[in-house]
View 1 (cartoon, one colour):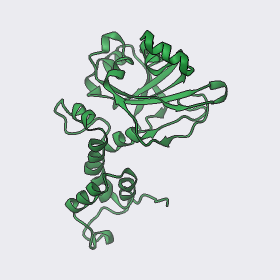
View 2: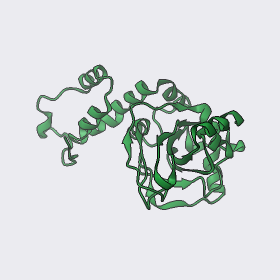
View 3: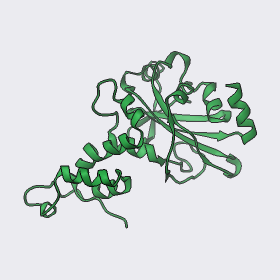
View 4: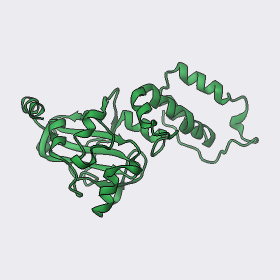
Length: 248
């Protein structure tokens, strides 16, 4: 069932959807029993602005905490009660591979975006995507989502991630110092913020390809103004990628 989001309703006293609706506490308990099901949270968000606001403030936050509790504790350990780019964007990043379109961000082939059941995000892996002078930054990166046998492109992997406190990170400062340009048309698929190309800024270390099990000159990734990361790589054959991991 496809639901069209309605923005006319502001959940005022005259709004039809207030008649007999549940309180925030009751909705919280219902979704807690549903284990913070992301499809149902998205469906509730389509009802009206009030439910959309409730989902953004409460439900997506609880979904993120349930899906990746240690990661969420770390991302908030600097004292912030929110995360860069909002909880809904982070929730989508946890469960959605953005894919790519021909002529789009990665200008290669068309691979539709799709939801993934479960993805491992690693702070240790994130270090491999940072230049040595930036490795005090905290970056969580996912394992690559593999799309095999993509014609001339070979085996393609998509990865995604998020910086902790990106506004204060050394990566952001270096991007600004190097006068890196924001992409003129494309935006982050998770929060719609503008994107910096780490490849264009020459800020992708060789260790990134080793960590991904990818060809050295076939790794590209972007970071948005809110610190969300999305990237693509061409994966080595399995035996070669195992050798690359040993070299790392």
